[in-house]
Length: 195
Image 1: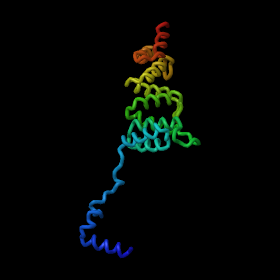
Image 2: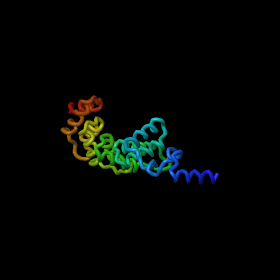
Image 3: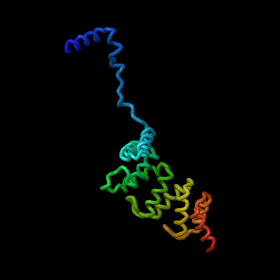
Image 4: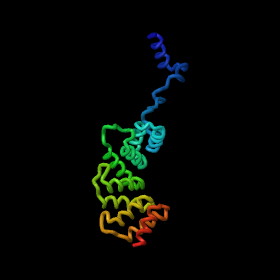
């Protein structure tokens, strides 16, 4: 066997054409590990795993995409942490959830802005209750048309959460939510009109 390998090496070095097409030269060798998937490819991979209930693999790929700044992956990762999917049951991942919601919310991700507002409203997910921060994040999502954020913000103004009752702003946000078909907003607006 050693003789065959030695003879093959001699033939290759001497330029024997019989082996030159089979054995790649150093110029032909490509490093496969240099090609990294994009954040969108990682996100799509994670969605595939998630949809098949492979939550650990989904979390890992969402994390890779989230670390590259993919806002939707940051949101989905936060939601997985908050819901306890693909994580160790013995740990509380609510702080991780808030961290990833915040990263996505800061990029303008509407759903994350709403969820972060909700976390501040109730004081959950590793954040202390803060009605002013809840209003801030609800407002960002509501301004972009998020109907539940509009309802929540209107209710905060109506119920004096984070300040005095403000019926003008309550009506404004509740009317926007009602215009999108939210029945709760319609009901509250009717109550306000009866006063």
